Image 1 (cartoon, one colour):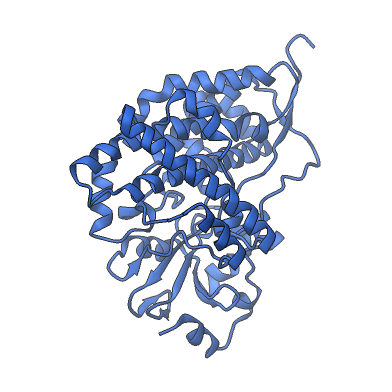
Image 2: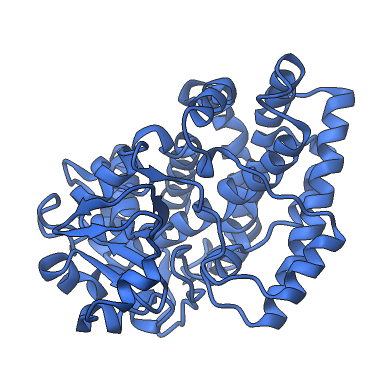
Amino acid sequence: MDATRVGAGCPISRIAEEFDPFGEAYQQDPAGVLKAAREREPVFYSPELDHWVVTRYADIKEIFRDTRRFSASNALDPITPLGAKARERLAEYDFAPGPVLVNEDEPLHMRRRRALAGPLAADEVAKLEGRIRDLVTRYVDGFAGRGRADLVDDLLWEVPAIVGLLVCGVPDEDIDRARHYTIKMGSFTWGRPTEEHQVEIADQVGQWWSLSGRLVERLKREGGEGWVPTAIEVHREDPELVNDNHLQNMMMSGLVAAHETTTNATANALRHLLSNRSSWEALCADPSAIPNAVEECLRFSSSVLCWRRKALVDVPVGGVTIPAGARVLLVIGSGNHDDDVFGDPGELDIARSNAKRHLTFGIGSHACIGAPLARLEMRIILEELTRRLPGMRLVEGQDFGYLRNASFHGPRHLLVEWEPAGA
């Protein structure tokens, strides 16, 4: 049964009618916008999106775990369908998106995940700590003496891009060239870009797709270490499990996953820690508190506000029946503020005992494979900034410039200042 027909046949509540994930209120306070929904209408049909919106922690968790009745196949579909001109531009690059881990269903998903997960396991990622710390130190050296910085432009956009390329196995000499193709996919996948903007982003996607193919071919010839080189070995042993198209999609999507989400997560963390001065000063005084602070920041202001599933059968959720074929929007940023799970969820509490229960990395068989890397990068960045620039503060009155979209959430700018040494 088509979700649109079901929704159209039912009266639309005020909560459903007013829900606008592209609006300013949602960008500033997504959990607050959905507070009434969590309390009174935890699952509702949005005619504007043609999605069923799920807002409570327990329901979101259950749907993530239920791979029998919910499919991940629509996880990366543009929430706003691409126009003809954007599709034509992608076709010029022979763009051929295929399933990757986040939008594959069982049993293929777990077979591929087991084969490919090794390089992103926590113990393997930990080996990169020295290299990541050196990279962060080099970037901080570039602005520490200025007394001011845009942490997004001067640190947080560049470092995760480079680390993502390293983890994917891109050779050092190609990193500088490849990182210029890092793209903001938020408006493409999760927003409402104009037709002109769709074409512009499609051109960037196409260029990165082409370069990804060339990088894969180089790694096939010359070998290497990392996620994609490991996948190439799997490809040689089992070309049906991992084919050439999958390798190219891995190279392309791996950077997007490792880059923008980590950039946004760290920027969100710094914004809110610096806004809660006692929390920032506590971390400066006791760096051992940083790992739990990372989890609390991931809960408090997720860089991925929502994710998607498709119902395979009629499923009762939160007092309503989501019909077979319906598209489902799981609002992680709302579930992370469910007061049935987190006491005083609107408070940033870096000592929160259950902070790690957040849904930001998903849960179940599709839990984010890159979570250990994101946690490591965030910890190192916070350690270095609290150690070197404890007097750092937000510039007053700034516009953080959130990119209007339903999911990818982080400030486009984060202006800070401090008294430089010797001033």
